[in-house]
Image 1 (cartoon, helix red, strand yellow):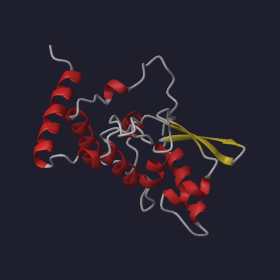
Image 2: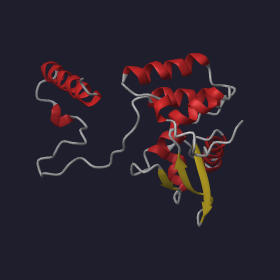
Image 3: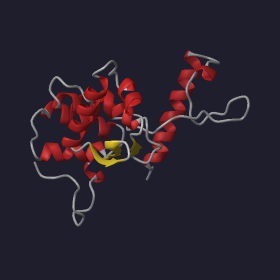
Length: 190
């Protein structure tokens, strides 16, 4: 039986071969976190994201009615070191990177952070930077599945089903990501 990893590797090799045919010799102009530079260094400053991220962000924005959360969430995600933890010691920079500038930028960012917390996409803890000092980013697939199970307003069946389809297309199993039933989930029932 062929493993998912072998299938992914075969697909990646075919895509690379086609890319080289369409754009020969251009690989030096592309972001490749595994490639080495002429000096021998790998590209740095990357994070791993789910291939389903576009739909995750769309679903968040739909659930937050006229107060988009996607830019704030993506800024958080890009601020981790692949450990799902963010220290929020520079809120002005986080707000700016999320698209919120000016006098009210920090307030708008804080409101979006609180909404992400309310929707259980993140968990916030206070610390030396105030009430928003640290954030933990929960697995968004599990969170969205939780919202689907609890019929949270704003989560449409069409968007949820599109997420499931995309996950299946890439070989992900959202239901398989759920923690064992014996564990107490960190998400409160709605």
